[in-house]
Length: 122
Image (cartoon, rainbow, N blue to C red; front, side, top):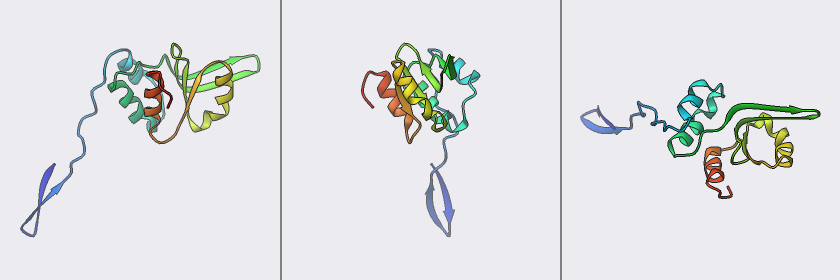
């Protein structure tokens, strides 16, 4: 917080955070450095990296086998979990049929992912 003077008064003014949260290890550094995810997901992936959640196996994953095509923004194979953008929600049923839990883009989606990775129902 910084102080600003206005007509002899001292006002408290919130200052934005100057540094990004610390990224934990466990594959996150490489995932965040190499991933080509949409900027709107940066906050969520940074949160997940800092809360001890395991890094996804893939970011920007596509699967195609015969007539079965499905895409996911992030895939956690061991946890059978995928995170889908609003543009990928048409793939949700295919992921569910393949035995995956599906988290769809929404407000605070990263909290739902965190709960799912901890074995709790979002």
